[in-house]
Length: 143
Image 1 (cartoon, one colour):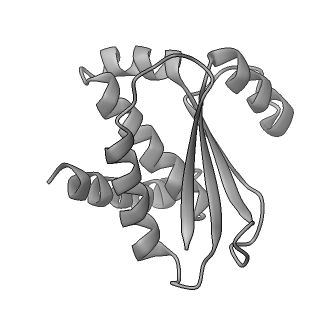
Image 2 (image 1 turned 45 degrees about the vertical axis):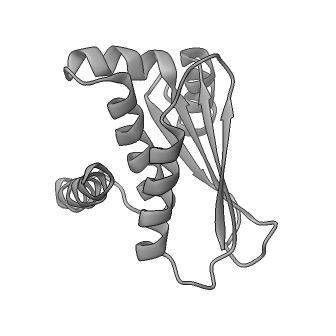
Image 3 (image 1 turned 30 degrees about the horizontal axis):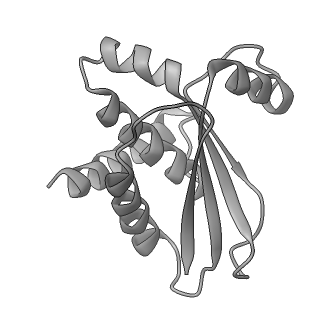
């Protein structure tokens, strides 16, 4: 069974139950029942995202969410992946999108979970597929 662990490197209220529901919904549909391990979800600062973005993507700027695959999901102690979300960027984007911070955090979690599963938005056809998946899973969480 795949497990989700949430870490907060700053003081923030997050919609933990909705995040857990989203995680379970996505992974139940997208991974085989035999998948094992954990996903670490880390809420952090812009500086941490900028450092990770520079180190792993050669982009010296902050971003909203980064996902890293680590282990194959075949053992209980496997770390399938880590997702980093910049809370300050999420706060700015929530204002920009006229959404609540919780809504933006849920959207970024969904985006990060899908990246760990191999979805991407590098080209337009992949972006369309990923956006459809995001909308599908977000609608299930909010229904």
